[in-house]
Length: 65
Image (cartoon, rainbow, N blue to C red):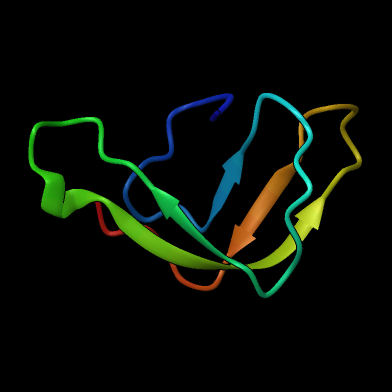
């Protein structure tokens, strides 16, 4: 689950808790509106675990929505 809203144009997302994801994996980011076409797929480039239990995921390209 996201710690904060991921705005259009963002290429990082902050999570509420640690995950077992790895760089190179594909993730889906659900939309918060009613248009299911706004859901997006991105590849994880890196995971910064420097903030305890709140990883920051860098994506391969910015979010569109």
